[in-house]
Length: 125
Image (tube, rainbow, N blue to C red):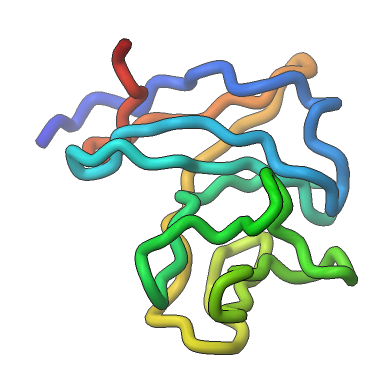
């Protein structure tokens, strides 16, 4: 386990994340496993999570990059109806077993970046 600070990795232009709109998907290696992740904008701030429902470890979007419910206030797992808070990933209803895995983002100079952690690294090609 490394104590080095997390390295920011460019993800997208800030304009690519529209309030309550489609997510920007990206791939990560989480605890040694290749996973999809997604970034969204909620209440003006960018947020990112692993695309893995806490109820059953499967991707949540039934239509590509669509995670918000019809109100734009909740993240929804299309398979079993688990509902999560878009700012924290906490379970807000349905068959959750805890919250979503949150990925640290930063936004500066019109660019959104995600930050690595000891157990969260970029996918190497």
